[in-house]
Length: 232
Image 1 (cartoon, rainbow, N blue to C red):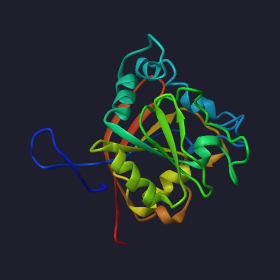
Image 2 (cartoon, one colour):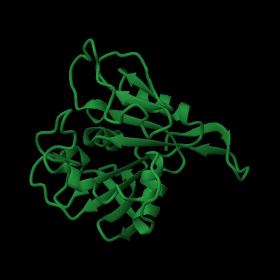
Image 3 (cartoon, rainbow, N blue to C red):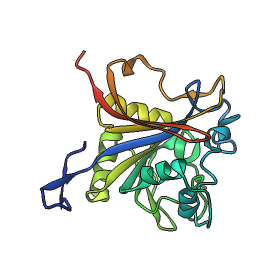
Image 4 (tube, rainbow, N blue to C red):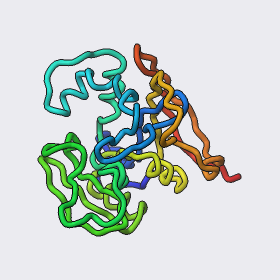
């Protein structure tokens, strides 16, 4: 938890605590994207297969301005993952698969003119850039590191939770820093063989995960964990 906010809880029991949460789709062999990812191929070769379970869900379609869609356990799980989110933190590569200076005509992200977030988004980067307003979403580019990005996101969330949207390295940083409260992985029955792994560094060896829920749906298995760190 990032600490209490100034707002009072709905029950009148004192200040609310903002939770830092991440949820991400992953292959059975541990990859969140395939090889050869780029701005034109943001999920890498074969990476779109990790997300096929989500595109027909009613809750996903709703946040993208679409009607209809499937309901059921997967839909309920996705809807819960976006509930009570007041701000988002993501890495530069999640935003545009890029590195280095932004250039004279910087890319405006993968989500078009009306991104589905609808809350402030804080993008970790080493290169300064003016805030970007698209639809109901404002992207703020933070060059001072994860701690500052989380502080700003927590303030913007105003008592709601902060979602870590990815990519893998940003989630890894949150785990290493001991600031991630909840991790939900959606395991697709897919083998990619290569690409970007969710976890591959020895720095995560001291992390304690408490499984709090398992949900099985037709195309994916959802695992939710509380995240802590051992003192070892």
